[in-house]
Image (cartoon, rainbow, N blue to C red):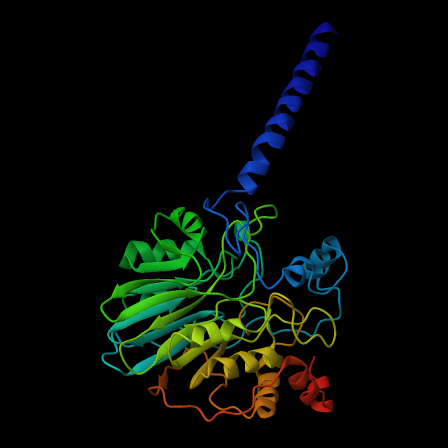
Length: 390
């Protein structure tokens, strides 16, 4: 009996120690400090924030509590329209280099795009993993990468917008680093996450830039989002868009992952020079019936406004049709984008098939039309045809 009591006491002691260590260590592990620096208009000394307000990125996008939101996400118990389990993808093999002013863009999937120009191969938010989430969990891609990893040309420059799993994929970054040693540019704090792969990244604050080769500069620019790898490390690293300024033909803009916020950040990017090609997200915007955007994700209506405010000559819609992150139908984003573009009267912003190289003409001045506000475009799109899109 005494031996049993000793064993039980030993087990209880071990449990107490384990619980104590868990309480002490695990929160620190999950709440990693990715960046330390002086406070600013978007950093309070511990966490980053959106200077145009965070209320729309903090609350669950469909309303209600977080527990209910995650339950609905995991179970799909919300009447969401069905998605295909897999979609056919015609894979392509890009050219090794595209020299001079010529520009070719290939949408590989989600926010991953290969842009080739000036002899430079640029890759945005590269994700080749089958799932977007920690520990092999998270949404499974329905569209395979439209370029096989081994068919990628040598990559010179990688842009990583923030640390969410569908944008910062450590497995892919590790493979790219081992193979090509590309220049990786990101926003503050994400270099700490990227370093876990063995890769090195240049991390910059908004409104800062780095020259990657003569005549080619990457500027980190503001957008409206948030960051986290776990539940308790929220906003320890910054999110951003990018402008790649090029010696001729116009610039490349990559919006990253973003909500609309104050709607002024596209003009900040456009101030760096004419936008030849803009990569703008249009998906993951609907979490309740009829929703047209969430605080963290622009929908097609706001994407059309971003396109208009950038003054971009050409834009490709991204961030749709690869990972199911929200409740709209598989092809609702591009169908809704067509309606949004009819409202703005703009041109040059339409879907490109996965894997199909797109020739991007040098920048030419875009005919100007009156800048629309969000309420106006939502009113314009309030039609039976758009309302019927789930």
